[in-house]
Length: 447
Image (cartoon, rainbow, N blue to C red):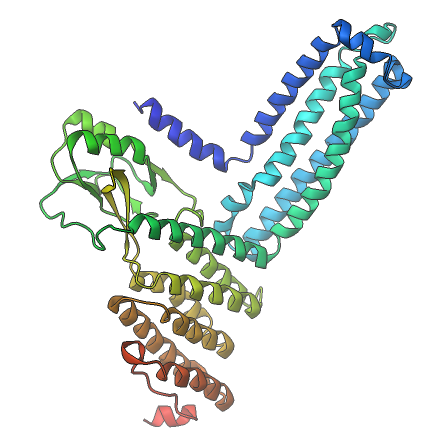
């Protein structure tokens, strides 16, 4: 059975992603507000305030008509808004990639606005149910004034919602959100790695705890796991990268000392699995989603190389920022000492996942190929490690060979060579040993 702390940890994660939680919570607040208003109407202060309000708010027929109009209007706005959300999600899945849907669904603005609509509707229904036609004293005049103010607020929120939805279907906005989320995660990782060893500890011979169920590794409740590691004076190394699909029995985490059965159950309960990828959770998630958008944009159905170029440029910035960052992450700090180590995707594997699909699908487009070469050049800036430089050089060679095989027009081949020449001007170990393309593809075939 899951411990309450881990159950609460997983619940918080689900709440942050669910489209329904915010509306339900806000609607509950509105129901409480309606109860408070109805109670206030029974107090002497409310009867004194009633004389200061416009006379129309104290008439039962006027009150029912006003509330009925507001209910009808807000229900219409709610239906329209939910329909717009579904259209946006469907369009994003078709034009971008289904992997961006969790991020769009979890947009806080949209969920709060939908919650305001549902809460206002519930508030109006509770108020109108208390009005008796032949009893003017039953009209909640103060509550009716609040209802009118809520109607104005909902109209304002509708304008905000339309703006938010119109942003959500813009590919540049989606790419920027992915880039910001991935960049923020990378900066946090850099701060965690300050003063920590740049390599995973040697865990050969350490005791291994296997996965108890299949799924994609998502996150770890570091607070609970850190308490266990601190109590037992242990160090642990997770055996797979975030997003790795585990089957039952696959090595999950190694500990510097064996665990008792009770500690094993506590440790395995700290892990959370999922099927969604959020750019803010890991830099590789954001880069992969941007790569999928680029591949989709290159496809004949979309035919939008400009979007692909935009995505490649942003990927190049992230690759540059990864320069010199070891492929690890740390957590469960105990007085400044990291007790938990995560492996991260190495640059070689990252380029295979992010750059290679674009290279293959864009082999017919010299402009995208040129942008990929420039992306590799940008990645060589800053302070990449020797392993990162070697992986980037390998990808440059692959791009050059792909262009040599697919780019036929002499002018396009010359444009590719212009970028290769700029790469050859790099100094020192950053300079790749790559050859220029022959001016004519027939010359290359003869050689």
